[in-house]
Image (cartoon, rainbow, N blue to C red):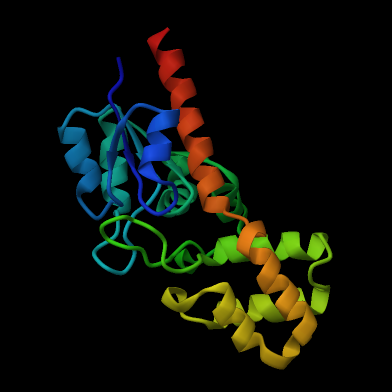
Length: 218
């Protein structure tokens, strides 16, 4: 039987995660946490969320050390997607759309998945840029905004420091570049229509873990 641990925080509520996959859920990973998990005997480690600027981030070297010890390391959604795209040629496994986008070069910076979150509840307190991108694309496809508004709102989002990214904030920064009626329509729609690609990818990773654990057990 494999012992599985998942580093998870704002990408998906741990209680929702437990309903998908019984595992040990740990807070967003910082440097040294993966090696500690290896020392604790986990044979499958899934890196979803990790710290970026608050403390030292998960290092490439510790992932490589875990892989050399025979531990399967899977990454998705946030820090995990970024590290998997960088290290999949060395054995780390990536899951999800965000991983694919990093791997293809569509995404480059860790700023795409960075956000701030409540340190107790792990609830996100800002919107990651990748979710904003996906939301703006969907809004354009649905006719909520036009191409000009899409481009203006995306440019505004990119210009805002990641802890301050909210839909209200980026709409304000875009200002007159977006028609006032369209801006209001977008802000009304986004309350229930916003995409959460990080959450979707985190769920995909848990289903992947479920699959490989079942396969390994058989």
